[in-house]
Length: 493
Ligand code: SIN
Image (cartoon, rainbow, N blue to C red; front, side, top):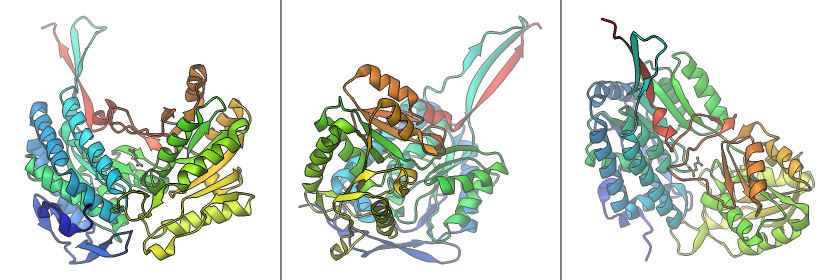
């Protein structure tokens, strides 16, 4: 039988409900707390500290002190700790997945997928830590020699979202700690428990006191964010979240000219050309659109389908989606869990009603599932989407599939690029030349061809336009936490 509650955890110590500063589990200085709820049942899961600017400053101070010694560790030592952490995450996959499902709502199968994905960043950055080479530069002046090397930037703030609370923390902190930075983590208020469990395992893996600090907050999130962005001891901020908040943080960071990685909102098109295999396109669309109940920043927000196969694709997709079970993430056979956030169902309904007002035709779902007790929405498909609709400009973040029609390749590219953001895109085609042409023309950071998942630790993740800058994962991920230093030597005497 699948586990259903926190009492089913094998390792009870993975359930932590305090902040974590300088290797101590701590309450907020103010004594304030907030509650974490299960979005599938709205039942209380935990009460955690509502930390504010003063707590954050302490966490930064602890990370700053720890950096003085941690920066002297060798890459090999850091790689060993990351590998041990990776092993511990995988050993405890059942417990971590259960905590994740309970606080986020995603199914246990997806949660295990996320835990595996999270661990993969630790293994990847263990390798990368040892490959942050500098170079010897050919010189113009024969009396000189020039070389470069890389050094950790200092304290890194890792601000993680609620949709992937474990994987986004290891994608950031794995890179930072591998580079030799110490860290302050700020998990989302909806999902702090997954993050706190990671601190237990990281400590067990050998990371020293102060290398990892965690500030939990819900209502004081702007205050905490501001402290992290304006505190001069913080040298790097990595944020995954909305473009709106990203702009505020970037402005705050400007005062001390901090290094930034911004992985912000998307509005990914999934383009189905008439030469695509329908089965492959349907499978990719379900994954790209419905993973985590539609709550991924790279989710296929706009499905563009070439007119010749529009009806056939819509019918095949509807048939498949009708078969998917909606329910609690802990229930067997469930494919679509609840939405995580209490405002998410209302937001999705705003999109659905707006589409209807502008001529959209709802062919499946279209309403909340209130009787189920949590934040559930019927998987929804809307045909006849057009450029006037809200969904054309804004992420839905829910299991709502909007089908747009196009005639030519040029039109599809224009439609795809007609937005302010550019994170991911998916194209479905059996033509290799077309896959090249369209990939090159799309204004995004990542393109998936005949697949619905852009996530792999070895592939750089990030966007262009208002989707942000910097890359996480890949060879690039660790460089974001390092500064290049050049050394010029006089060899004449
Ligand atoms: C995200 O939605 O922010 C990340 C998704 C991923 O890495 O797969």
